[in-house]
Length: 449
Image (cartoon, rainbow, N blue to C red; front, side, top):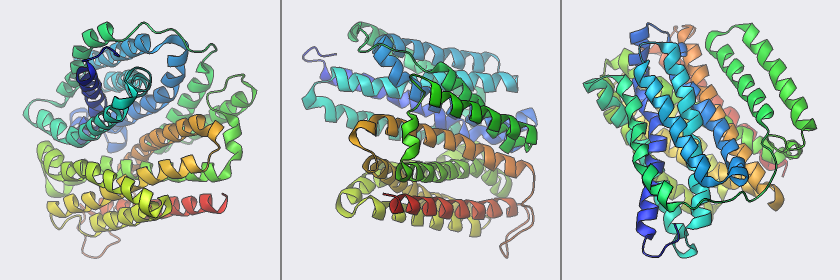
């Protein structure tokens, strides 16, 4: 990786891998109504195609960074890619069984989680200092582009062929294996120790049980989940090397900031998961039209607004950017709620506003959380923030699907909204309330600084 004259090729392959690792997170979202129809499922159940991937991706992202110090980057990256593609093959071959599809997505998430963690370590260790900023910039751009173009690719494949073919996209990452096998050195561990696998399993089981409760509203799942979370809390207080540093629990300002980020990002994930169902039921759009015409303008705008948000943080401070992002989220959700059955273009416009808010919130949350940590806690704290945000996105999708499945919002709350659009309009109003709660929690983080 450090050989002269190979800088462009090195960075290009890292960008290629980053693109295809995040692409799979978005391509299935636009196809959720197709999956629900094929298996005769309610939205809450069909959404587990997305929920399962996000949960294992979030937990895995927190684990791989630590594993790289113990076992080396090359070995973990190769194992992660093989697991990622193994899950993809399982999903492709067993696509006639919904449980098998969910298991395949769980495996995909566990493998894909290795990519962002290992790419960051590779750049930090093996890319020269003069090219490091270029590498981080390219990888970040490819990640944003992958997230933005995902709904378009997913919609086209689902429309023209079948949604199960989306499982073939991660196979493109295998093209990078010869490069990384040849170019990455056989690095040695940089430290000794263990990874808290028991803690990770307890946390994962608790999250799955809580997500099942939000999907099916069965109180047994909630009771079991609470017991598992209690066991997890007891475990991290006693473990020598816990899954995350329990001392972070005493930092109230950081915790409130992290909770606010989880609420806001989880809410936006819930909105994104609802849009395909809404466009199918209210405007009868095809999967390709939903991905390319409705979701794409918003997802691709994240790149532009992300740069704007970063500039504003430096000039006006993260609190200004955070409250601006919250305002944009509320405005976008209200726009969607009030105009949901007016025209499809109104939904696309509302999503552009909401995605602008998401860009600002992401930027501000990271800056705010880092500022609320002491230097010695930054690594562990930012890892916890990333974990909470990933998991919250999965829970947001689960909650949104569960509410839609129970048909509890059928009575129109907004005058003039049609019966078919009422559940979506009402749910978007609940999302507005969730954003307000997230903003209030963020304000509490400022008071405890």
